[in-house]
Image 1 (cartoon, rainbow, N blue to C red):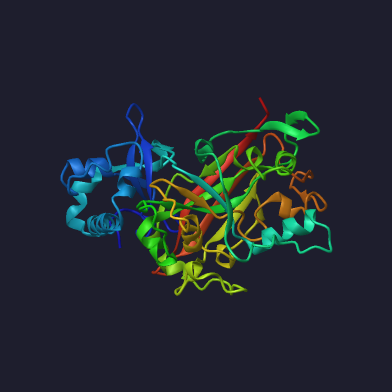
Image 2: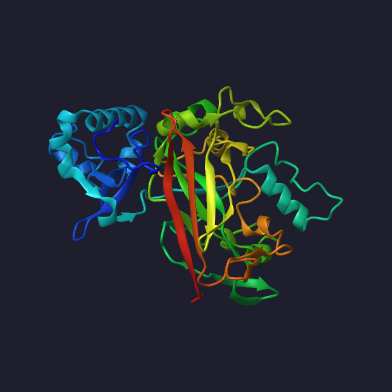
Length: 392
């Protein structure tokens, strides 16, 4: 048990210890770790001698620490657990603790590549049934053979709380204007730490050696822009104009107790995508629109896992890099308004008597998630939130 006060129901109990980047008024951003209602200044711990000297925590990004690899990740985690459970170390740690309410949280990583996957069988089937002729298979021919994905725009990744300005673009027949089909997309994102060495591919078993942890993601979408641009080449601006992530990266080590068997895959995937251990994660998401819960999908049912996403991203020998962000696509079949309203056929009723098909200006979206911990409690990711503002 930690000597730091940890409120019941917090996202950040002792068994979590997620990493992020924070700043206090008048100071530069630096690396921190969340516990309870506090953030630990990791740079201060190393400079005052409570942790061994390290350059990883002096900058305003996690990338240097991520690139150090799993031996360093596990060593730092073990040292933190010792510091936070040994009452004798209290005097050394207290100067490094700052209440979370007094700090500003920043984008935790410099994103290298943004890889947007679609790993939910339910969502992929829903989209096919909405837009394909009924006599056709709703799934693309290769969907069950590999994790389907595309590259996004790394510069579009922002930290939770950043305003969501309604995007404009080509809608149809050369018409340009603001999207009328702005949507949310509740997802999980995996953050790559250790880069791979080209031209060597990675196996699913390499996942814990290369991926540091996970974040909560809202990959905002503009379905009408996507429909217009998808005809020649596939989604481009309509799917990656903005991707919000939670400010805290939860280490894979904290998620071990939440692992479970993934759904049966049929047909059996290729050898490089084969998994021999539990790789799914029992993460319960909560999606709120203007304070009202509109969906509670569970990530454990996702067809493709994070390990398979990584192996597929590296199968050609092209390297993955420190700071790469691999997103899962919508979790389950209830993580977008497109799914929840069946493309507008079944509008959502709101407490004020209004209805929602897609997002309106002024709407506030907040997504949270929690997973079971080894001590019977639950740990979380913080939240990823954003409010919609009118188009420029």
